[in-house]
Image (cartoon, rainbow, N blue to C red):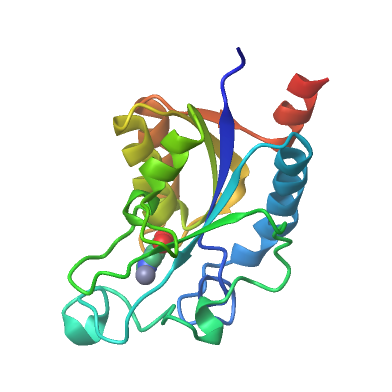
Length: 198
Ligand code: VGL
Ligand code: ZN
């Protein structure tokens, strides 16, 4: 049997796009690519997950409370909404991360759905063995999500044309990708994927 795949779209939210509270430079440029991946996975009837960074007003993640970041992605605000250009199909499974006020919650493996079921359980229930990961930001959530996925025994494909980084230090994203690949993930682009499908 073919390995069952899922697409995991990480944090494509207003606050992580230009103009947002924690805008990733050119973060919105990846959205048309992500929409294409969504179309392919939808057509193949493969599950698609989308995470949202979903913080309470007070969290140790924010500078004001000892963390690293300006206030962003507060639950139920416009900043936490998906970017309007993202074309989510109705069957997408939504998971929320960064809810715990004591933790940064970078990894999507700390995310859960609206019934409190965590990502690993959702993936296992669907028999997923391989995860295609894209979204924001390469050097934080994408990185920690990919590393955790590998640790949990999933195969990982990193969508090189559908990720973008914060780069607090200029090489952060480059180094994140290197590390993910070193730990066993494979890279892929839309072109590769379409070629493979023939
Ligand atoms: C993230 C910075 C702050 C991320 C979340 O999900 O990549 N980055 N909060
Ligand atoms: Zn955050």
